[in-house]
Amino acid sequence: GQSLEQPSEVTAVEGAIVQINCTYQTSGFYGLSWYQQHDGGAPTFLSYNALDGLEETGRFSSFLSRSDSYGYLLLQELQMKDSASYFCAVRGSNDYKLSFGAGTTVTVRA
Amino acid sequence: DAGVIQSPRHEVTEMGQEVTLRCKPISGHNSLFWYRQTMMRGLELLIYFNNNVPIDDSGMPEDRFSAKMPNASFSTLKIQPSEPRDSAVYFCASSFDGGNYEQYFGPGTRLTVT
Image (tube, rainbow over all chains, first blue to last red; front, top):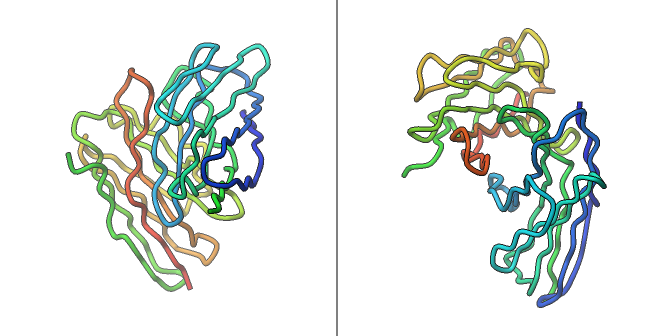
């Protein structure tokens, strides 16, 4: 099976940088994804890392270290609209299903 | 593209009643996932279909839950009989094999069992 750990809550001010860490334990590993979910909404895809290193998409970046079973999501130039829950999810087998972490609630304050 | 379509968006039912949730995946996607989300248990995968075939149903809680995918454009999740602990938001998601493994989620069905 898979287990993922990420912080439950993070609070920051507008314009700041937030890093959400995710550590995982899996019997197999094919990739790490990140999803954003606003309150009352559906999860939406942010990024997928299959190889070590940093992937940058606008203000958001995602990093993976397979040897450390660790990844993070970096949110830069925080905006109020970034207040949401962020989930890391592991693809642990050679199919297409994901196992999700418990989520990190990010609150952005003015 | 219309995205993943789920119906109903809200369902309130009494304990013991049958509940059927419906999902239309994005056209061309060949994997479909049913998830349940609660505060206590987070986002749980219930069942996963690939090319209309159930691949992994290990997350289905018990025999009261069943899912079908009769064709590439329609899936159902049925709960019979329903219980108060089944109250949750149920999401359907679809994806296209390969690529970046992005899953596209529907808006969800909020189920309340009284």
